[in-house]
Length: 333
Image (tube, rainbow, N blue to C red; front, side, top):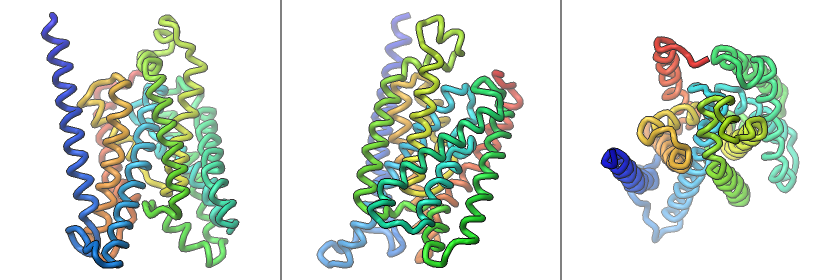
């Protein structure tokens, strides 16, 4: 009986070590990849240093945004006990995108946009999530009700966004369209640093409430009996998930399905314990998005594919596969 836990812990440590080594290798590949070819740019020339700086910035942005979206997916899946819950599917990303796009299209000054962009994205994300839960019937709604409500809210937000784009001036049109498709090129170092601080703080807070998330995955009644204040922890979790999704959207635009793919893969490798799952998912999500961006920059070089298009191409079939498999096994609800 004592051998089994030690064997499990040894396997978990091995997986974490492999994840760390794989992370370093994949990040090196991301830095070396680009439309100018595979390899390290000539750092002894101004052009080479500029290319290297551009690649490093994009890898850093991918780590921040991927970690935020992946952890938001973990939180939503734990709170709603729903394997398909993630910011994009629930309409949270679309709400955040609508709020942020309003600021971009308003053409405000850079200093004002710098502060208002994440704030309006968070407000839009929270409003979208509240509408989805209200339409679906609360946090205990069935998986089909949540998916349908998320699709409806996402469609409405996307329609409003398309209307704003269609009536926008020519100056802000190009930037907002490229931003809507997902773009890991940060507009400023200050914005990336501020977003990184918010994301790290959100992930740390999620890790702090990991035992409560473990209890909530077993159901509200069980969590209540073990001493968890379910209503309070659900509200805190929803706020954290929306904050992480809004931070990612305000920095990189609409990038879907990262919060669906990565949590499922990491949960199958490391198990359901959130103390290990949250940091591992954050790291894996960042690497996954940075790798997707490296592929987007290299596949059709010198042309560049928006990274949001690539994640959608990966996430769409993944979403349908999970939906089909879970439909055969039956839903918890």
